Image (cartoon, rainbow, N blue to C red; front, side, top):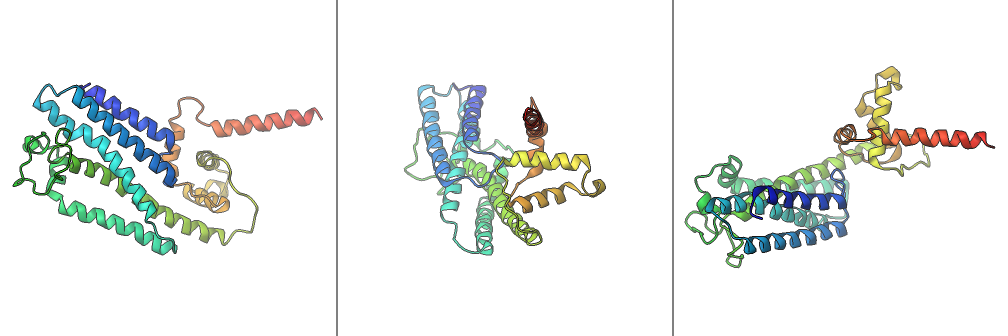
Amino acid sequence: MNSEIEYKNFIKNIDRIIYEKIDIDDWSIPIDLIFEIVEFLQKSLEDLRTIVMEHPFVSKDDEIHFFKYIKPEVLGRLLYFTEVYSVEMRKPNGSIDSIKKYYNDRLNELTIYFESNLDFYQYYRSKATHLDSHYFVTGHIDFKLCPNCTPYDRDPEFSTCYDHKAAQIIANDMLCIYLNKKSHSIDKQTIIEQSRAFLPEHPFKWTGTKIALVELGYAIYAACVLNNGKADIKEIMTYLEAFFNIDLGDYYRTYITIKDRKKDRTSFLSSLIKKLIQKMDEDDCL
């Protein structure tokens, strides 16, 4: 099991299970689902430890590669979802401004952590190797090189001097994206509310999927049927969000997902056509 390909497949399987549970573009993950993912990742990390204990490394290079790249990928995901859980559990109940400040304060904490660990960030991200035997080999903790870099109670057979910090880099990168998306979502919600103020009252609420509405919005844009084709995609999507009181998130990224579909790239529009034809046929039978 110590081959790089098998470890990569292990990580891919973890991601597959996670993204079967959540929508990668939906940044409003229910707390109970986050907790479920944390438990799953804890079990995955234990499974990874069992594999390593049952299949010892064949060389020092294999050991370094595992603790530099493989374990941090799994542990990094665990740290990330644990942090997301903590962020959402501690989120204040208050005004939009107070919530946005809360997310921005957490972003500032990531910046402080980055600055206080700048040397290792640069080492890890530059893919340097000259200190790997100190950072990523078990039983080799040089307190002069990395003071206070690891707790005394950490598993000595499954931990090295800096594998946890490597995982923290991965987690912080993902958490930075998450917090920025949450902050951006608040801004979007403000724009939606402001836009809705100019709309007449109506009883309509979008009950389909977000990806279906994005597909519809891009179809309207492509057909050039608004303002003689002069309405841009941002204007169209902002109007749909305001009209249906829904945050479509990163709709361009969603569009890329739609465009890359292997089968029916316009599945929602195709279903509309099918439903309309079915309705026409039923009316003809009356």
